[in-house]
Image (tube, rainbow, N blue to C red; front, side, top):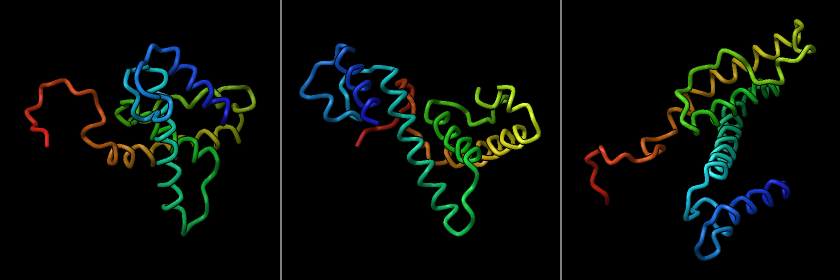
Length: 142
């Protein structure tokens, strides 16, 4: 965890940002760095997914690690602008030779089920402002 924070700080400092202590308020940095912004969005998405899944599974049994991974991946993808459609392929860990077995296919099915369950919930909580403003809307600011 400390290594990731150090890397994030190094990226922030080396990105040319200027301003009063930007590393103290990572969510409110003054300049755009895609790598840092994507990493922050994914971390927040994973945390929200974990919280939503914990509330949802409080009364039932906790789902498999693969289901949890798919559920969290859906939140991350939606946070990065995805439409929430389930991908055709699971992530790379499900591609290796030991995953090409009956057990491996069941694990991949769990991942797909988690993704399919998480995507609509992630889409519903994404909000209308989770996009770059294009100036085409006629909203008035408060």
